[in-house]
Each structure stands twice: as C-alpha cells, then as structure tokens.
Image (cartoon, rainbow, N blue to C red; front, side, top):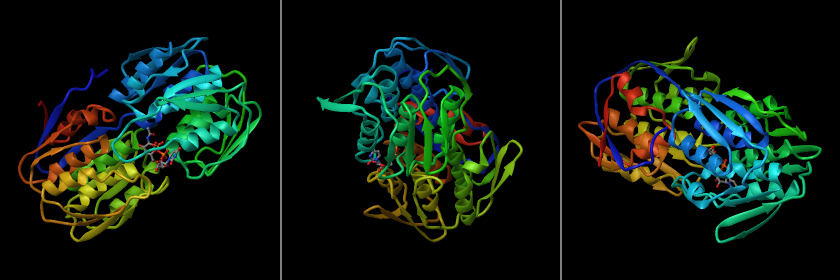
Length: 423
Ligand code: UD1
C-alpha cells in the first residue's frame, strides 16, 4: 500500500492524442463501505478488485484499530473480523477520510455502542451527518456528542420506516448496514440510487442479509440476527472511468476503458456525446474516440442517475477549451469551486455566481504552476494540463493517491507526458 502522503507534484506536458487501453480499477466509493460492512459479521471476508489507494490504506488502519486483521495480496483484501471489536473510530484516522463515518451503523448494529469522531474529508464546504444520526435514532440508537466525538448506543436495533430528506449516499449506506441486523423490517425511502449502493447491498446479501430495492429510491430490509463472512468483487470505479473519458475529450484520441461499466455512465456518455466525444460499449468495457474541438454544453449535478458532483471538476476543465459558453450548476455541495481559481491561472475564462460557473471556452489554456486542493480537483487539473500549451506543475498530487490507482502510469501508457516529482 502507498506510504504516508508527502507533498509531491505532477509535471504535465502536452503530447498529442491518447491511444490504447486503460484498465479501470475497483471503485473507491464502494470498497470503503464494503470494508465497513465487513464489521457486521465475524469471520474471514475476501474482497477482490480492491484498488491500491491511500483511502483504502486509511480504512485498513481504522479497521485495524478496531481489532480487524486486514491483509492485501495483489488486489485481494482479506479481512479477519473477530468476535470482539473495539467500537471506536479516533479523530486521527477519521480526520483523514470522511468515509470513516460508514463504520457508525455497523458498529452500533454489532456492538450496541460506537464512539466515532466527527468526519473531516474533502475540501468542499460543510458536510453534515444529521441524516445518518436521525435515521439511526429511528432504528433505536441514541447519541450524545462532546469534544468532536459522537457517542452512540442502543439496546438492539428495531426496524423502522425512514424517509430521508435528501437521497444522501452516506446516510443510505449507514442505515442499510444498520438495518440488516435490526429486528424486523426497515424501509428507507428517498434512498440514494448510486451503483455503489447496489454493490453494498449485493455484498450484504452475500453475507446473508435480506435486502430488496437497492438501486431504486425505496430499499426494504428484513433484519437478520447473524450474518456470515462473504467473498465479493468490487464494481469498477465510474469516477476513474469518467476521468479517462475527460482526458481523452481534451487530448483527443482513441482509448478503451477496460472493465468499465457503460450502464453506470449512461447520462455522462450522452452529455459527452453532445460535446463531440464518441463512446460505445465494447466487449472489454467502453470505447472512446475524440478528434474535434469540444462543444460547450450546460450541466447540472444531481444524485444518480443524474450527472455526479464528482464529475463536475472534470467537466469544467473540459469546458475551458469548449467552442462556446457552458453553464455548470452544482446542486449537492456548496464549495467545490476552488480549483476554478487554478484553472483561471492557466488562462481559463470562468465566472462563478453562487452555485453556478459560467465557462467561456478559450482556444487553448497555458501551462502554469497550480495546486490541487482535493482529489477530483487534482484530476481536473491534469485533464486541463493535457491540452494546455507548455508545462503545468500540479502541487498536491498526493490528493490523487486517495482515489486513483497508478494514475501517472496509466496516463503514460496512453501516451501522455506526465511525471511525478517531489517538492
Ligand atoms: C458520497 C461520495 C462522494 C460523492 C457524494 C455524492 C463516498 C466516499 N463519497 O459522499 O464522492 O460526491 O456521495 O454523490 O462515497 N447531507 C446532509 N446531511 C447528511 C448527509 C448528507 O445535509 O446527513 C448533504 C451533504 O452535505 C451534501 C448532500 O447531502 O450536500 C449529499 O451528500 P451525500 O450523498 O451524503 O455524500 P457523501 O456520502 O458524503
């Protein structure tokens, strides 16, 4: 696994169209929740197609702190979950990764108590967990909080009807993981429909849970007293796939995303089609072709099956060299616009107003020293740099390690001129 992050930079020089095949790794946003779900059943779980990224290393450390033995062999992770757990997620680890909050539901369900530090995470505005807590309260948990730590306890969980105020991915996952061990039936209405939720439900079913409706906005669960360890293969990362789509959109070329699931990328491929990028499902995954200037389009982020908020920085980067004006509207997170100042340093013409960004395409960006403040912003700056004139140096490359496996190697294999340097 990658060692502790230190500051480093990516140096990118334009090098013409991309060509070849790139393997899409297992999905970060799925595997982290599967690892948390393993807490629900003692025994040895086996998870295949696990990306070698720092967020997986942080989740491994967190589980290790709880007494779980985590081993990696190639892309397979073995998780040995004992009968006794330390039901505690300390600040040092939770602060590194917001997804750590996913252990709250499983710990309550397994141990009847959980002490979890409030999450930190990416740099895009406040990200409360009120929906997680309210739903768990409906299942019978009680919470107190002091000094940044949430203490939860319950005397067994009881099934309930829960209606979410918003289809939150994290809240749906936490509630689903708690409900599988609650007594009786639970329904989660206005549930998130993301493919990662379907993956989690499939893993839980493999463990013996009874879950129906995952992928729709109503999920039903019939609680089970004892679950068994499972063996599972993580779905491909649709955000990584979108990143290579965007890279091909800017650099041009012909690329096959091997292992990608075209059905997870339907609307994005439609939108990219409007921008001039050709895509087609391929026996190996998804074929991508681009040989013209990008067309400008308007885009709004929405919960799945809408355009994901994680795709937005990539789309803004693409629109900076579009042939007209595109308006991008963020409907999920208040921040997530900081990378725009960096794109402007590269010559982009972008105006932000509230949660809108108005992007006027220019002929070409010019390389500049820039900084990545989070994982998707880092990816967007690389995408922009692939088409820019001259050299771009992107400091904060370690953010990319959180979610992209061998990102530089994969781009180099497609013909990009990119290298990693220490700063
Ligand atoms: C997950 C993904 C993230 C993605 C996001 C939306 C992981 C590790 N991360 O994040 O990459 O961008 O889904 O697709 O899987 N909210 C509340 N109260 C809550 C929970 C959420 O107000 O209790 C709000 C958030 O502030 C945000 C919106 O709901 O405005 C959506 O958040 P949510 O779907 O929960 O995102 P995450 O699960 O944190």
